[in-house]
Image 1 (cartoon, rainbow, N blue to C red):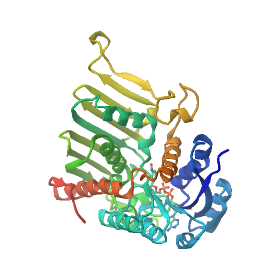
Image 2 (image 1 turned 45 degrees about the horizontal axis):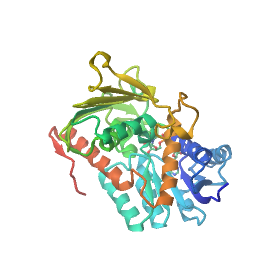
Image 3 (image 1 turned 120 degrees about the horizontal axis):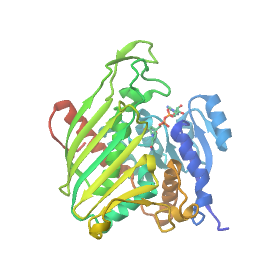
Image 4 (image 1 turned 90 degrees about the vertical axis):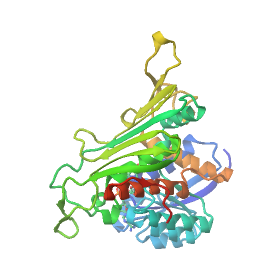
Length: 384
Ligand SMILES: NC(=O)c1ccc[n+]([C@@H]2O[C@H](COP(=O)([O-])OP(=O)(O)OC[C@H]3O[C@@H](n4cnc5c(N)ncnc54)[C@H](O)[C@@H]3O)[C@@H](O)[C@H]2O)c1
């Protein structure tokens, strides 16, 4: 076995994403054996000592901390991985960069464009490798969509549309804010579905179809007041429950985006479709191993949407897993992203999306927010 270099991970936040990232670090060396670097689960941090201790034991971290500043000070940490709610991303990332650590951060980069810009400035000044976990890019069917678009097979692109639909906040008695419900409190999350869900759609869209020029948006908060878990009082709800926008891409195509937590029956329906002059593509998170493709060049009697089962050895990432025909899942997108980050340490090439690339998504989010508030079209070329 090849001699591996260690990448000593300090993970902050041990909730949903803390688990997906820990799983990725544990799996990546086994399934990507050619990598030069191997992650070492050095330390995990969360504020509750009992919880973080049991998380460390369950996932195999060597140690734990209850203050992220302590973790950043440690000499035995190479990379800080931020899996906390959005209000702490900027402060942790800036401190980690200043301490010379590599910084991996969950999406959205931060609550606002202004906060995000400070993070980009910090990692660029420190010259440290950095990456944002927009993991959907690394689902093999989505990566295949990118390869097909880049090959030019679609021809001139006319339309890009995406939806991210959920239904978990319809109940008016659901409280807002606090542990587990920080997504309901804009002081912590920055926004509602815009930063939480549409940021994923915007990242994928710009990766596949290039930059977005301007936007026209609507937002709605259907339930105006809810009990706040932390104060015990009924307070005004500060997040967007639903957000839709349309836009122009720089390539002249039109975009339509919709996200809501009020689409009864949908838990996490992320879909996108691209229509070009010669061909179209569509993808659905609920059937993530498939990519649908329509080619207008097919013989006319055989023309129709084909459903590609993206599980063959020549499909992106799939040679690392089982045998052709056997699918993989959500968690594998994080393993792939971890593998690409480790590979980037060998090649010296930045691993996409970097903080600077994720800032472009923040610019679109900011323009969407401003457009919804003012009822006007907004340009995305906002400078901070
Ligand atoms: N890439 C994706 O698909 C995806 C999916 C879900 C969440 N996210 C993002 O990941 C981040 C975390 O979301 P989550 O769903 O894992 O949240 P979560 O509520 O499940 O977990 C958050 C964790 O952070 C800890 N924490 C909070 N403040 C802290 C602090 N100051 N110091 C140390 N620990 C702290 C909490 O105790 C908890 O363990 C968010 O930015 C979210 O937008 C991304």
